[in-house]
Amino acid sequence: MVETSPLPKGTKRYDPSVVKNFLSTALIRVGVEPDDADLVGDVLVGADLRGVRSHGAARLSYFIVRLEKGTLNLHPNFDLKMNTKTTGLLDADNAIGIIAANKAMQKAMEVAEEYGTGFVGVANSSHFGFAGYWSDIAMRRGFIGISMSNSGGRMTPTYARESMLGTNPMSVAIPGGDYTNFLLDMATTTVAVGKIETALREGRDITEGWVSPTGDEPVLDDNGVLTYGAPLLPLGGAGMDRGGHKGYGLNLMVELLCGAITGTSFADRIKGARGTERPAMGHLMGAIRLDGFRDPKEIQKEMDATYDIIRNAKKEPGQDKVYIHGEPEAMAIEENTKLGIPITPAVYEQLEKIADKYGINALLE
Image 1 (cartoon, helix red, strand yellow):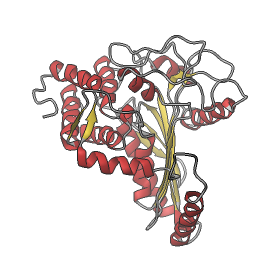
Image 2 (cartoon, rainbow, N blue to C red; image 1 turned 30 degrees about the horizontal axis):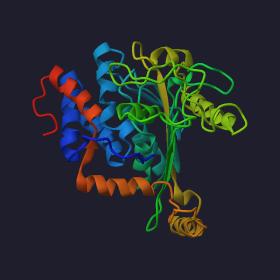
Image 3 (cartoon, rainbow, N blue to C red; image 1 turned 60 degrees about the horizontal axis):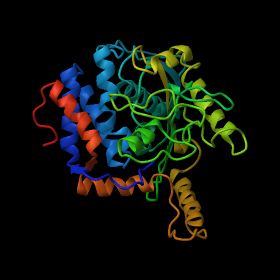
């Protein structure tokens, strides 16, 4: 979701290529292979371009800390097995999740091209960036793209009061052809962890309903990461009156599709959430050919007709447009490509610490 809050005082904008170069350089200094570091940098910058500051350059410390501790594998042995013509499993061997997710989506599209659909689960992985990056890759190749990931130690199930499940994001992208693409990218909690971290970095109050009122006060640790004693609430909030059980159900669905199906232990995922043990995350990547249903042009014409009806709905006071999922991000990309990626003072301070530690002289210059 695009950040709608004003940028904090002291925020500066930087050319996206400069930010990506810094991120990639830092990862290479830690020992990541150059091609892999370039991919990770592209995903993080892609988030910042979309206005999703929570998943951009601010996430560099996530990878640095875990690579330093050895809970992420710098030299993984990827093992991909296609167990049917259209479904398979990639064991990522504790790799950086972005690298593993890319391999899985590339294989899913290759299989879908031949058989109509392709799904690859990923076991023993880690944070894979933002879910929309992977569904978008498939969409740009003309497929319906599906991506999702579990994690651990962040969300409290309905009627529980401790952090157990992750934010468990999911994304579906449908190519619009000459019309508007549909790109849904969402956490199954009321908000992503990064949104809370961003608010805390920028000195803003945490919105009521984001975290459980029975948990600890949300604060950041020395690495700018939200501590684990403040459980996030499922989409819909606490209890069942406002549909919190539905968000919990979606969250658990992603957990099972990415965990039980891939063979990645939920218990290990909870232990690994704090960064001292392997993350033990799982993902699911899928690609589906539009022409497996009917002529893609006809599908896309109907999509556009649907959008027209929605866009012409009566608007709330003060609102002049109803957006289709993906449109706010496209607008943010246009603006941030032209003006530069905003780096807030708190994120700059994090990057500066990494630059000093690894002897990177040209910090965002």
